[in-house]
Image (cartoon, rainbow, N blue to C red):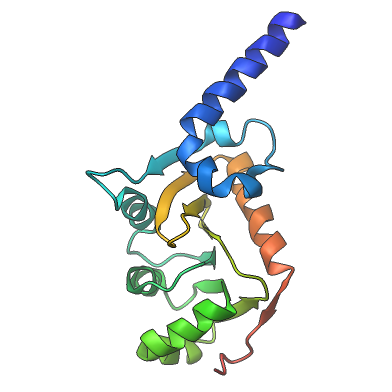
Amino acid sequence: MVHEQYERFTEAVECADRMSEFLADAAEICENAPPGVLGQMNITTAADNDPHAPLNRYLTIVGNEPVDRFRGVAPIVSRVFNESAEAVLGENTRMELIVDRGVLERSIDAYPDSFERARELDQFELRIAEESLDFGLLVVDGHGIVSAYDEHNNMTALVDGDAPEVVSWVESLYESVRSTSVPVGRLEP
């Protein structure tokens, strides 16, 4: 019994060490993660010689072919994210995105053309979280992604996976944010 507990402890320490850069900016959202979920996830971190590694991993996972369903939380405004979402939007894609009020306002100001295109899409729903968002996530066609951001809103790390437990956990994070958000109707500014 002691040996089993020690092995679990060792696994938890090793997982925390491997995930340390992600947990530095996203520990709060991981507090209720089911045991073993983080250990099943891939991690990609920003580095001095590759500061965009998490973003590149995100783009690789999302791809550029239409997807069936896209559910996300975005704590920042980004042309790259707008373009990647547009690339995977097909005629039958159901897309839902949650942002906070600050992101909505910056998005309308910085990318009015993208905002207008989104207004015209029947399959796109934009939702507003009342509280400021400090992490990102995406559930897309059987893959879950959670991204951590530093105090300057730079993506510092991304964890992802397609194991059922991972996707279920990311979906539960999404639903917890969604439950406190409201739809923006037909995206009226």
